[in-house]
Image 1 (cartoon, rainbow, N blue to C red):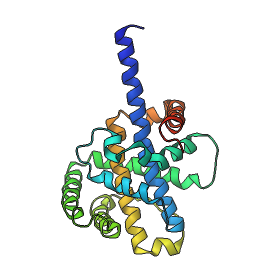
Image 2 (image 1 turned 135 degrees about the vertical axis):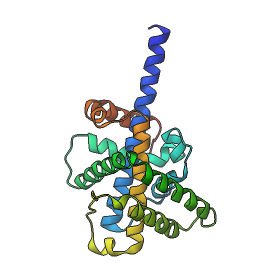
Image 3 (image 1 turned 180 degrees about the vertical axis):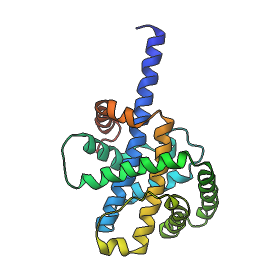
Image 4 (image 1 turned 180 degrees about the horizontal axis):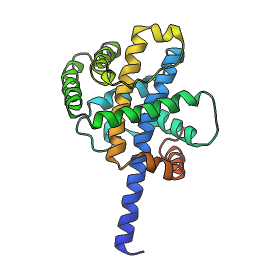
Length: 221
């Protein structure tokens, strides 16, 4: 293999890895939303890493945005399961959320005014976050308000399914909106890595293989 071909292969492998991780980030948020909507509970480390990614404004890779591959374990496992071909009922909601997230991301990316407002509000919230580091409810409430003032203005809405009791809980509702906002942020990482609907369809098997490789070599549990 020539040096140029070898470099091209490395570049393609790195791109495939970033696309897989970005999709895993979207799936992770969707899985967490589903868990909170159904049970009111979800993996705290995954929630923290997902919400914190909203404030990594200069991140150029998924690893930078999420801190480590381990922080994406829920998403990598979830993506592997979605692409496995096994049709489990509980995955239908997660799939629906992911498709809705990608649709909203596309709308936001074409809406420069709302994008600018969203970024400005997040930067302001980042300053507040410095004084409320461990108050996830306060942070989620701020992010929920941002979601309602920006993303919720679109006609398209993601309908969340789950326990009526859990969905009526204002803290759960705020966490769900915060996670959806983080999922849309992950959509930018997916686009940045060259991801598209067609790539997802055509490279499904390659992405599935990547998830298994990541779980076997970098997320060994």
